[in-house]
Image 1 (cartoon, rainbow, N blue to C red):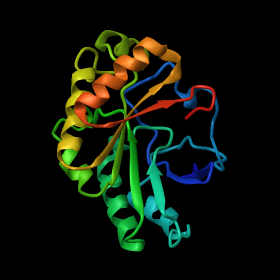
Image 2: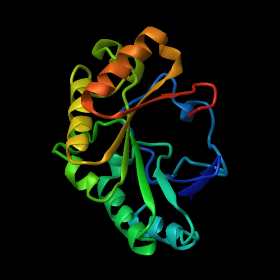
Image 3: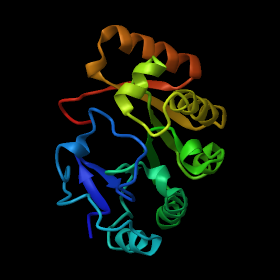
Length: 203
């Protein structure tokens, strides 16, 4: 079994699926089998909720102030387990702040609106904007949803903001200053916080 819970630079992360509809050109999972304290983040088979719960139970979350759903897959590809795990973590530690790192394509992945049920149990939503242009976004993410992924991601992000969640949008620093500033403007228009991630650091 791969690592479900791992730490990275002082943060606690939950790896609950390897599935992802994207094959981003910069994705760190194409470069190594694990990051942080994890020995391996690739599952032989997708973890069940019981296996995720057992990993949570074996880890001391009592003093963990925040945790992030972010592993070697898109967490909303395992939406039911994501929701159940988030609620379980809140029952274990009511004060814990939960963040979801996502490509924002949950509605396309699950074929229905998902922002509300996610925002009901996740405190911070961090969406990968990647690029301010839809066509270039498709080239970077190589998603299974060409042409419709970009507007779906923006719609999901906007709905999370409207629901009152703390929402971040991110780009990787390799897209150039001009596109970073265009991305910043899109983010501000939506009402989210903007963050530029470092390609060299992998986060």
